[in-house]
Amino acid sequence: MKTDPATQPVVTIGRQFGAGGLSVGRFVADRLGVPFYDRELLAIAAKESGLSEAVFERHEEKPAGATFFAQPWAVPYHTAAQPLGQQVFFAQFNAIRAAAAKGGCVIVGRCADFVLDGRPNVLRVFLRAPLERRLARVMAREGLDEAAARKRVRAAEKDRAAYYDYFADRKWGAADTYDLCLNTALFPSDEAVADLVAAAVRAAFG
Image (cartoon, rainbow, N blue to C red):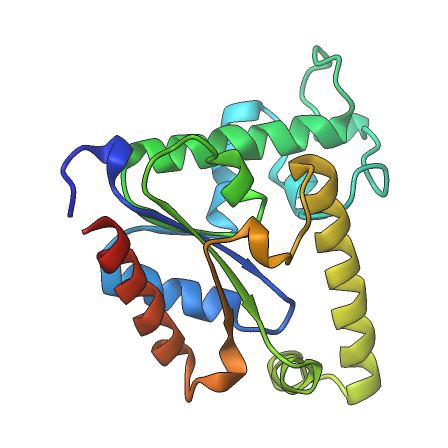
């Protein structure tokens, strides 16, 4: 592993809803021996920005304009001229940059692949799976019937795509946006997917 924190490998993981991004991300972090960031970034961003953590949870990976309206209870002081949605994004932007500056890590979602443009040794991964497999995972995980799971998947992916395409100004899920795109349904387990990603990191960055 490289000793300079600014050049230690970082893995960013974009994912279709129900493709196993969180599980795979945790396994990758474990195999590489580095920190894992998902919702942890919300707490970091809230602390550094002065915004309520509830604001970040409410606006998490939501498209601009959908819910980005300032609530007086959410902002302890009114000094920012930007719309709240942009404040949320840039606070997460800063949290992602700060996490990567500390050294190698795995970051799920939140346009991290775009945010870390220009940083060396970033492997940008996108995970997908056939809809039937994703529905099965969501049904088992959230206790939903198929109709409710289908609605949940459709809404989540619509939000993720709109959020990413707006802030990153590139296409969410498009192969040329990423370094490595994997169909998780081809593998026997999330651990097996993580093994491949970790091997790719070692092969690419040493």
